[in-house]
Image (cartoon, helix red, strand yellow):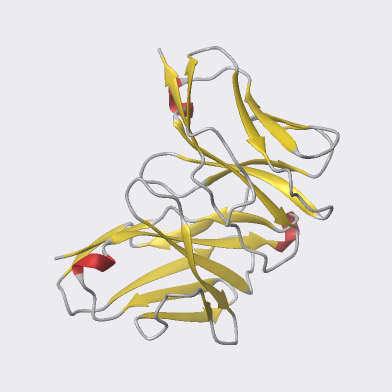
Length: 111
Length: 116
């Protein structure tokens, strides 16, 4: 079973920040938080990952709480093309360790 | 990021025939690859772990004789759906960890299989 819980759906206005929450209260010390998204009929796309520090790249920012029991993915200026299912996954960063997907959050960016 | 490519993107086959789906890591080597299946409006479900040079490891409930996996090289894994039935129609996705990229896992574009 997935070790994360996410809201099933969210809406966001185009141009505004999209903040997607994720709870992972049973995360282990060696497990990273990964975020992927899946646009309809495509394979999942890597967004960002982190262990305990906040991370930022060209796509998004990842804010991890100090106790690491939850995190938030931030898309700073959402566009219509960001409409997708977003998956939050915890995984030990060991080669050969696979992902367990939950249902994710379906983000709809509205014009 | 690293690139994983699948072929074909979509395929239609007749019941009882077999179909092969290829998964390639284009710019890195992968001794392990993962195969997932996704039905409409559902999340990805892991089917099996493909290991270069050894047998694949199948998840509970996945028939190894029906879903044949061959990890032929460090950049290629294949999934063959044998004696396909309409209920095998699904979106099949492969992935591979990039060891040079901190073991982040990258996914292929997916392959749509329709069995008629």
